Amino acid sequence: MATKQKNTKPETNKKKPAAKAPSVKTPVRRAAAPSAGPVTLEQAKAIAQAQVQGPKRAVRGLGAKLPEASVGSVGSERKKLALQRRKENERRIREYKATLEVMKQRGVKGLAPAATKPGKRRAPGAPVAKKAPAASAKPLQIFAEGDSWFDYPVPFFGGGIIPRLEDKLGVPILNLAKAGDEVRFMMGVEERKVLAKQLTKGCPAGGPWDVLLFSGGGNDIVDNPMALWIRDYKAGVSPEKLIHQVRYDAALALVRAGYEDLISLRDSLSPGTHLVFHAYDFAIPDGRGICHLGPWMKPTFDLRGFPTRAAASQVVKAMLRQFAVLLKSLEARGGVTFINGQGTLAADTSSWHNELHPSKDGFKKFATLFHAKLKALFPTRVL
Image (tube, rainbow, N blue to C red; front, side, top):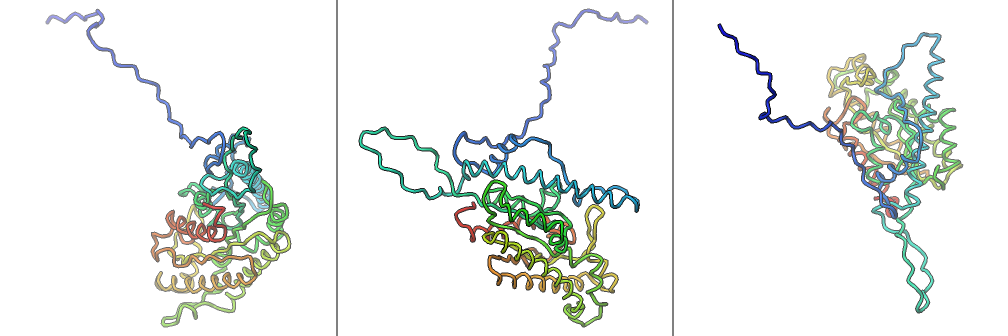
């Protein structure tokens, strides 16, 4: 059988495949900042980011894997975490200052121009001076302290209330909140010093703080100690009677003491700073935690023999209503606004990311409540 001779001549008639262009990832384009005049928050952040040196370092939050530690190394690990937290706060302060300085210098795009004094009359025949872009109203100076409702880890749909509220207000917020924090620690020795420093020194970009947003108390009344103020389940007994009221009053008294000390601290160090508090919505004790943390409520109701989630949910609702009454009463102190968000979320697990934290849409709804309240308080200074 004859074999075919291999053709060694080049194929001239065959079309060569077109050369592929090198794969290049298209960079995400931020809105370009104008050379003069007011800027948006996004534009101000872009300008500030170019000015602030140093890489961002993430702080351990709900999604972080904690290192293994022996009994002997617990103290060392705590010191490391405290140092890491201080560095994280320093980074947040640095970036906030740079962003707000841009907005104070340039103005906030979308806000009405600030009132100005009438200028001198132009003399007849004198050249017309070129007008500089009108500066907008002075941006609102806000900082936040609190728990995971303010400091929910960004990898989970972009964080909690604060980043969403920033976008709505059109101004940055210095967020010093820490996921998992409790009022008794926020108003304890170390964290009280941080708050006192902020209230004494004022905004890093100059001037006193206009607003302090504060979120706290939820972590003080749930988790393991919760078993102390929930009674054993009995059919036919009202949700209110299933709360060991004397013990729960003691827990709420500790929370109230923290809030009262915060108000007193504000009164003495920065009396013009307005305080804004909020109530948590009616969480559902369904046993869902996050990243090996939690659940924070269901174990107590299992221990106390509650037969259904519905029965446990009614007790949680009764507890949180008492918490809201506590915060509402603090408005009588003056310079305090209470936002009661209870009933904002549908009574369904889809409204919640887990037992204690709203879903993405839930956090959006709460940010809307905060925006509406701040807009009412400062109508000319927020979008």
